[in-house]
Image (cartoon, rainbow, N blue to C red; front, top):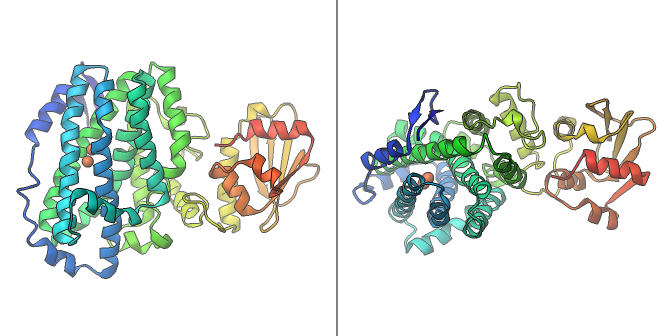
Amino acid sequence: MSVAQTEPGSNRTGTISYMDLYRRWEEGNWSVMELDFSADRVGWEALTELQRSSALWMYSMFFYGEDSVADNLSPYIDAAPTEEQAYFLTTQQVDEARHAVLFHRFFNEVLEVEGSIGSTLEATLPQLNWGYRGVFDRLDRMADELRADRSLPRFAQAITLYHLVVEGTLAQPGQHYIEDFFNKDGGMPGFSAGMVNVSRDEQRHIGFGVKTLSEIVPQSEECKAAIVELFREINRYSVGVFCPPAFDRSYTECWGFSLEDIYAFGLKLVRQRWKTIGFPLEEMPDDIWPFDHSLSAEEIAKSQVKLLLAGVTGAPHPSPDSSPEIQGLLFDMTTRRARTDEAGKGPFKVQWDFTDATPWNVVVDNGSTRADPGSISDPDLTLKTSWTEWVGIALNNRNPLRAIAERRLTPKGSPRALNTFRKVFPPI
Ligand SMILES: [Fe+2]
Ligand SMILES: [Fe+2]
């Protein structure tokens, strides 16, 4: 069966069948072994020290990622509902192994990190940040879960993580910008030729993921719920993947693009693909994508990068920035995530008394929510805590009950108000 869909990476709509995707695989076959890396070492030496550090950071993520996706695809083949899907996934597994071999050659011959695939992979580990590990640890667990449970909702969840998040949101934007640089620069001809092929393969893989989900998700509330559950688990990690070492923006700027460019590019792809699948971001619960959907991807990306570099999103930070702008952005997310229907009749007023930052308050009233800096009269609930503690609770799954028990969070208000708070602002 073939369905109309938007081809990823373009605005073109067309009809792609699984056999078309298979044919493209046969026609696009290529050889890593035939690539000539002899000129690339000179190109590598010509890069600045910062560019070399940045390339090592990015390509460590790619190498580890290609190995991980090659290892984790087998249960997807077993769980695929149709033979056509299973056959395509077997071709994909070959591709992923080929991509890992490309990066192994690049590490051996250009970066001069000698050794077997296993030992070269070990050299990538220090480069992998918190967000990256969170996403790939989940991919490992997902493979085990899919082995034990081949149901359609589990399959939809697994394809979402693998094809839409790892390949579509993390790998593709990174590839896009860095490939662009090397194509223009011409300094690494062997590696660039390999990356052009990798990128074409990935387009096909993501196309498969979008097609598969568009066939099973729109009619299935169970599949939608499984996808939402996955996003609740991993969004906090995936947003932190591109956080450069020491929050240093020059890691991307040395190639001619900004962090904002990469987040905006990724968000445009996410929006386009979920629309094509038939489960647009606007239809997912408000806590999954807590931003104003009418804003452009560039505007949203700006705020995302601010929160990331402030230490608010991404890896837990010992002292996240508490400037008024950053506080405003966090409370904007808080209000968007609020389940206003749980607030009961009349205004529900919450006051945050931060020990180390400006107080804030949120008022939920008649289905709308407002957040403002400063104190408010007669709050139903007052939460006394530090800004760092609250950021951990609001965004990083830090346990609020434990914070209360350990006196890092002191609520003041009736048990009923505390209960309402937990319903209106459930932990993510
Ligand atoms: Fe790949
Ligand atoms: Fe792939």
